[in-house]
Image (cartoon, rainbow, N blue to C red; front, side, top):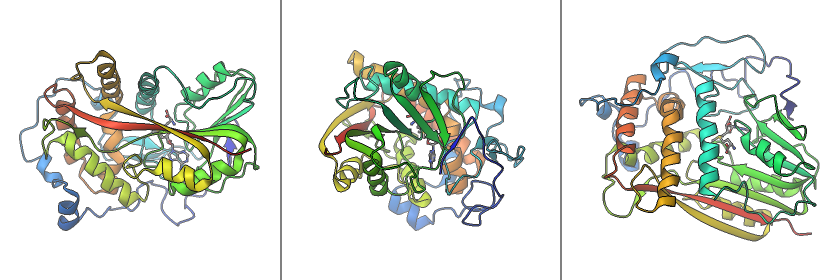
Amino acid sequence: MSSSTQNPQSPKSPQSPKGKATSPAPAAAPTPLSAEAQDAAGILPATHWTEQPLPEEDVDDGASSIGSFTSTTASLSSSIFQYREVHGRTYHAEIGNAESWEPNDQRHVDAMEIFHHAILVHMGGKLYFSPLEQKKVQKVLDIATGAGLWVIDFADEFPNAEVIGTDVSPIQPSWVPPNVKFELDDCNREWTWPENTFDFINFRFLNGIVDDWYTLFRNAYRVAKPGGYVESYATGCRFLCGDGTLKEGCALEQWGKVYQEGGRKLGRTFAVYEEDLQRKGMEAAGFIDIEFRDIQIPVGGWHPEKEANERGLWWKLAIEGDLEGYINYLWNSVLGWTPDEAKAFTRYMRRDLNDPKIHGYFMARVAWGRKPE
Ligand SMILES: C[S@@+](CC[C@H](N)C(=O)[O-])C[C@H]1O[C@@H](n2cnc3c(N)ncnc32)[C@H](O)[C@@H]1O
């Protein structure tokens, strides 16, 4: 069950229900992919990135000042704030079976805030596409809310609604509108809200954190009020290209492949768009009037059209806000790269993101549907 972040629970046992150590790493020494598995996934060996001269680092990302990719395993005091540390970055304390691949330190929270803006830009300034009626919306749930900005903005727009945001990390601000509440909860555990509770349930950007998308939408269906809406924003994990400028073996091309394998090993897919999970999950749960909007995001600053270019620039800014944080856990703790290999990869990735000759893009999908009355 969830717990309010204003009222922290007592410290958890240092052992998870699975009997794992408190480190969020799936095992003390992750098993790297076999050469065969790497070949099958089209992933270059991790050593590829350290065996050649590194690109010039022309962007000071501040990573050195916060000690990313150093190997320490200190832990803080016992509480929900007992964050776990992996190569210099902190991750949520023990909660359910959660194993978030995203850090929860300030640098990453800052990047999440940029993402909030980037997603607003994709969605034309809107927080949702569902046809919500201001007067009817009384209770709203945002699963895995991250920095909590969606909840705060939504609560401002719907001052008469109670808006609840959940996450495994208590990283949300405490100065919030009075109709906002944040709770600690693992979305993969049993949902304990009563059925028919919410007028609107939002799943934004849950790539790589959901055990089973069918169960997620079934849970949403149960707790949605009749006539209530569920909405999901998710992306694909691979960069695509329409003109051959995204070459096989470059960091941008490898990024999605490594994410996909990391998600497979973690048991929580990143390929939500590619696997069409929003449509399948909503249909299987029983939602009706399902609609979709697919958005192309040309990453970087290469697209000739102003609006598309702006979408891509914001995305690049958000990723670059914490490139190391986006790969630290997956590359190192899940896939077994060394910190040096992962750091070298980020140098190539940054170079590709800033190369206007590479016309990479990826897809995001917003899907929404209604529970029958
Ligand atoms: C990509 S962020 C998205 C944040 C937010 N929804 C947004 O769109 O800005 C994913 C969030 O999921 C949270 N998370 C990871 N595993 C979770 C779990 N099992 N239950 C709830 N939240 C989880 C992470 O802490 C992180 O804040």
